[in-house]
Image (cartoon, rainbow, N blue to C red):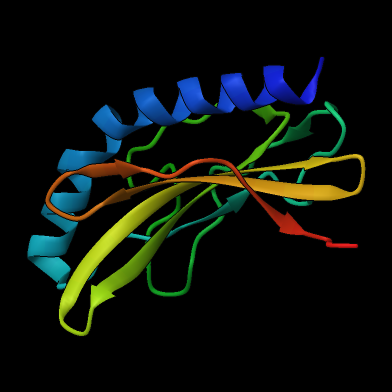
Length: 130
């Protein structure tokens, strides 16, 4: 499988995941004042097209795990996924879905940020840089 094929697969997952996560995130924010955080899985991040097992029981301190939050993820992936709670402005909360790929020693990530609407960012090489 090529890097582009893995990117395409991760982008397809992100697009489908947007529908799955939006309502639970809004409910969680209304109840807790923060967005839920989904810790990166699988860990370690797969590389060069290999797959690693995901861990739906992994959680950020004080937050539900992926499975406890009601999120169903594949048992194996060839990229890593996570959900971050972020601030767009000093008092504006948002969250982002992130897919990460390790390929031939370089890392790439793709983010979709939700702050009142979805904003898709392009793939970015996040390291290492020569």
